[in-house]
Image: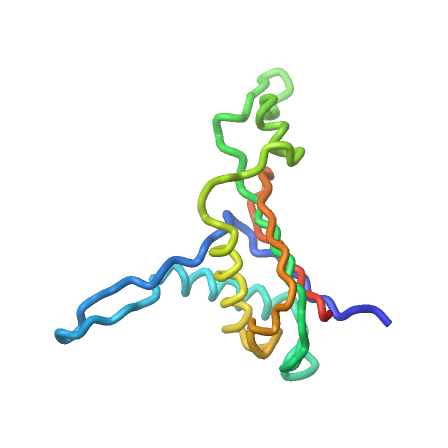
Length: 158
């Protein structure tokens, strides 16, 4: 019997969940979630809805432990391209090539834990993959460079 697996890709530069921001409403202090958080979670909800078919309430019912692997691919910075007019193609300089090969890894914002929060909260808000992200028993997070920025998500039942 094969393990139940859910995979999907969020295209675009990886996004880390932003902290709540304080504001005053009617003389009372309140905190609100920045609209960027909601926009990213809405993208995840849409992608899951388009790519996955649901036969039951939850793919991973309440109490089912899951493992989550999130791989964030960041765009190679523009300074690491070399352009060759003869071939009409762009190539990477030696540093850019090392980035593509995974020798040089991103050490920039957003932090991996914030990327995970944004992705997992989006999955939880979607409401069909798992009951709650507290079901995550194992989590593997990685950052790489690539010419195609994206976040790849794999969820498996343990």
